[in-house]
Structure formats: structure tokens, C-alpha cells
Amino acid sequence: MGQNKLERFADIRGFSNVFEYPPNMPGQWKKHFSNTNPITLELACGKGEYAVGLGRMYPERNFIGVDLKGNRIWVGARTALKEQLGNVAFIRSQIDQVTQYFAAEEVAEIWITFPDPQLRFSKLKKRLTHPVFLRRYQQLLKKDGIIHLKTDSPSLYHFTKTVIGVYGLELLVDKENVFSEENVHPELQIKTHYESLDIAGSNRIHYLQFRLNVDLPVEKDTILKEMLRETADEGGN
Image 1 (cartoon, rainbow, N blue to C red):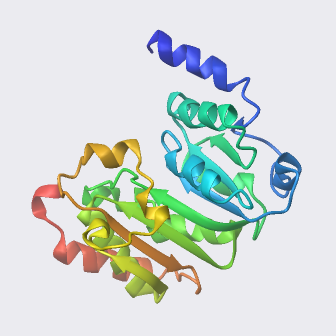
Image 2 (image 1 turned 60 degrees about the vertical axis):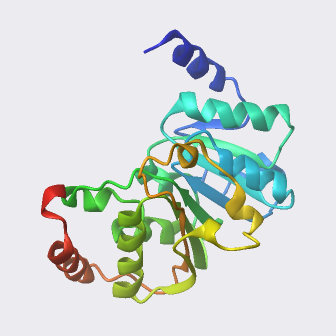
């Protein structure tokens, strides 16, 4: 591990807005923020561009970025401290442990911004919009909570639309090419480090907003898998 990473890991342990695998936090975020304002999560937040950007945009709401990479979180956490954004915080943890840090209905919305699309068919359940993860989100989201996905991966975009269709979720917004439109919403103009890299090489940004408004029967997971198997690119297996 590089010296710079070691220094950043040491730094975040002293940051008042960073929590590493925090115990006993469900139901306690109102104490940290000193208010009961709605909480939005940014999952796989990287450098926290969305947590910080939304925090600037909506001072009446609270934002928490979640990621395992402490050296990345350091960037957003340091910016939030410098700008005195008291409504922005970060959790260093794996995403699959997120249910340990929030009480039922403690979160209003979730943003998933440029996550690893996990392109191999064998990695389906690691995609952050797979029902395995959506069921976790339901444990902490308010009733009919909203999920935002912003990605440059056509595969993850179409996969998520398939999930929405199979489980009968309410699709609120579907933009196949965000920046092909005029008057792009300010929320979608926030740019992450990974967005600027255009790793997928698609030269377009996809956005979905949907509501977790129904139960997600485990029995349908097999149907989803078979549907995806039929259309899977053999070269990606």
C-alpha cells in the first residue's frame, strides 16, 4: 500500500464525518446530524462527489456516502469538512453490510453512482441493483423508497430495467442518454471521477429512477436468471 494511502487511512480515523464499520448506529443518525432531516445514501460512493454535490444543493437534507475504499472516501470527507457541510457524512464498509447501520425506514432515497457493473454472468448477484441487494435496501428505506441509478454501462442499465420489469417495480424516470436532452436536471449534472473516465466507452450516461414499492419474491430470482441467461453474451461468461 502506498504511503499516500496509509496517510489517508490515518486521516479519516480522525475525521468527524467518517464512520468505519460503526456499531450501534441504527436509529442514531439524528444525533450525528443534530436533526431529523431525510437521509439519502450514495452507495459505492468512491470520492463522494454525489454525497458532497447533493449536500451543497440541499442543505435541508442529510447525505451519507458508503464505500470500502478509505483513500477514496478521504477526498469527499475532506471536502465536506473544508466547506463545513454538516449534512454530509461517510461510512467505510462493504455495501452488503449496509443494513447494519440503519434502522427500518431511516433512509429516504438511495443513489447508486457508477458502480462496478460486474459484467460476467457469474457475477449477477454482485450487481448493486440485483434483487439480493434491493431486498437489503428495503430493510432500511422508507415505504416506497426511491432508488437512483446513474451509470455509463449499457449492460447494467438494461439489467436494471429487466429487474424492474420482472418484479413489477414502479419506474419513475428512464433516460438512456442523459446529456442528449436539453435542461438536464442539476442532480444529474454532478460529475463523478469515474463518469469522466468513460470506462464503458459508451459515450453516454444512463439514468434510472424507480421505487421499491412491492415485495421481491425470491422465487422470481430464478426467472430473472433464466431470462438473462438467454440473452447473455457467451463471451462474457
